[in-house]
Image 1 (cartoon, rainbow, N blue to C red):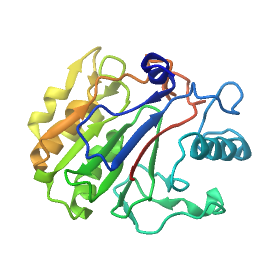
Image 2 (image 1 turned 45 degrees about the vertical axis):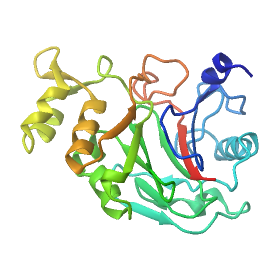
Image 3 (image 1 turned 135 degrees about the horizontal axis):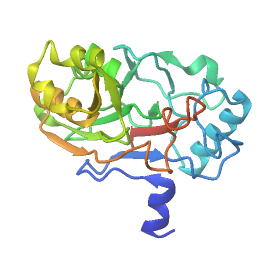
Length: 258
């Protein structure tokens, strides 16, 4: 498969991660078992699709990418919970059992695969510059405002100056319109967050999740930032909750130490 074909079905982060760190983002164009409107590679158990189909796609993902273990999926709740995984998942672990509640995950052992599911929210991947630690966070506006990035970094052993972060596919600033209340949630505690909002119609704003995340990462001391520039609503490779009126699947951002 050439580079053009690969980027159509899988996204490989373009960042200077250590050689032992692996990361990949799936798209809906991978050959899977999902039927309309989820076709074809939905990985979200609570998306409305039959769970057996989603689990079959998850199994396909593990085999297609030759993952060292089944991914550790999370039951994401738009909060600030962080889960640390030290043990590799059993291939026979049922999907409804393996999902710990949280919106970020951390691993330091080789072979532990972390996974974040999104369909407009922002996935953020982290790795230590020596490859000793990786993390993944689910950062929609609720999670960002609540402090999911701060919670994730606070639970990591690596100091922020030794971390790099990659911002994955999320809804873009020209597609994401929010109301006054969402803007106030960010601007009230930090006036500089106003740079992430542009007025549209009365009481509404275009919101730039990438700018909000970068501001928080810089404030915490993470300055090596990569990725961004995606728009899940406009890009048909990705699921988008807003575009698909809620009848949307989920794609996954994965990271692990090889």
